[in-house]
Length: 417
Image 1 (cartoon, helix red, strand yellow):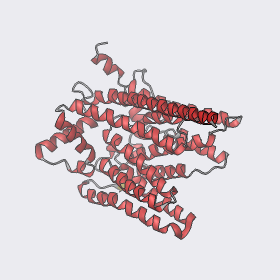
Image 2 (cartoon, rainbow, N blue to C red):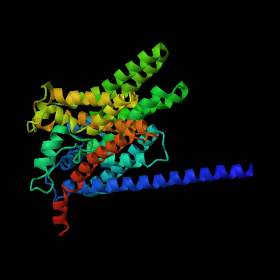
Image 3 (cartoon, rainbow, N blue to C red):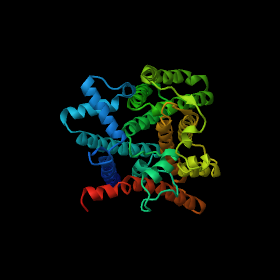
């Protein structure tokens, strides 16, 4: 008995050490992610940097807020980001420091959330897979041959115009409001899924409350996630109701009630949106296009996700989480392809729902991929697993290259190298 207790204590101690080690590695990887994002955004906010960027425009909005006492109408639709900046600026009267501090904190927290979410859904807390895949998720970009970092072409000619402004990316490297919404999107999906999976109604109450709060937080940060999650979530609930029958009807009603705070804010925010949208099929995706077929433009952004879908078909598996991610992505993509803001079509304002939908799709694809091949590393399965890892790594490496190599000439000049 004493020997048996000693073995149990030894195993528990090893598990504890492994868990602590993974937490430390997660923190280190998230700090590296934060520093890369700071490296990227420093160029956009520094007076000697880009000269014109979304970040400088947002600082201009903040200055208007200080001068007039109110944000411009458009910014009042998603005030959370600007409110956070205002609180930070109260303590540090330097926009460069404020922006870079926000960038580091938010990218660090988002990276940790990605790792935690993947670890939760894969149910494998002792694996390095959630740490690595979750960290690489911060830099996913399309797989395309149009990248040319050292060929004399500028960023605006190649990665941005011919890749990002057509295929989009899960990690736009120029928008802090998009960065602001990402953790809310992750947590919304997490608690929405927990509501559907948890059989205990009493323990579900807190899940409803947190789900409602996260969905509201997402629209206060940027309404792009709500615009694709709202219809996708409704369809997911209807499917859930059909599968389980009338016994879950009350739960479905509670989910609908949890939608209300975010929906009320969206309706309220519509009064601030001055420019209407109109249906103009494929106009948005074609503005900056180079005659590449639309199917390829869309597919190159989600090669890994398509690979996972094929693998699920091969093994005849169904993954409900991946299905939810697919629904969110499809609604984001449909809105991007269908609608345009005629007054300012070049802003591609409907593309932001497409980007965040793609981001959620990648999260769910990672989980489905790992669960499919966990413990199955022989023959065909091993080849498919390695192939999937390589595809995912290529997505991430191209994104890291966009974040790092693109701005290196400026940094080299700035540092006098």
